[in-house]
Image (cartoon, rainbow, N blue to C red; front, side, top):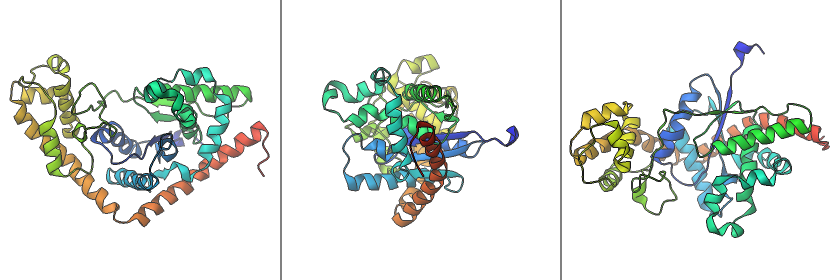
Length: 339
């Protein structure tokens, strides 16, 4: 293949844990759509094997997987341009993860800060799968020879581990079986925080439903959530420096900027010294303009589960065309008979 014909390959996955949040969309999926329409070969996965590292209601997991697939498509991901599939339909993920469990070192996994955060004080009672989660993530990426992986700061450590595993395997078997993936850090993407606490990321796991905007929320619900969003008694900030010292107001400014495709400085200038209530009214409209078309499309797609299942099956078939070749090479290299 000529170098000019080479298309870098992107892999990323999101857990199917219910409706997408505005944070998911602005922080990840919007980027996925942009990559799909640029120079990349794109593979996006609903990582249901990762989801079951903590207990899941089986019916809800299946529904959440379809909801995520519908949300992907409604947001602009095209099954004819990107490979979209759910992880468990491609067994090579689990096969390679087990092999990587023999490659990864305990010391490497002990340094994973996300496990410490998720396990908390109850680490002796969490599943073994939660501890070995990074090995499966490494398998997800390396199975497809992904050259690039879009990551935020909270996932960068896992990508570094994937690189360590790839390097050790390649070294142990004296052949470059695995590509060393590079992080795609997008510094222009703003991390969207909770509407109730500007120091925490917007998350579906938060107890309060008023902490997040879902991509299937009705217009009335969006308006209510923004109205109740935590701020402070002051008027809108006049400068970028002032806004950054006011976490909750700063978060709302970031959301406005991302949804309206305006520079944050322009948003600050537009609303400088104005009442927060006025800004919230306009912010509600900006969010609705972004969310409503995606919400309508998602709900339409969810009326036809067979169609969604066919899309996932088609994506899994395409994914297997790549993953089976990787597993065949790995099995041959480590001495497993796989005829």
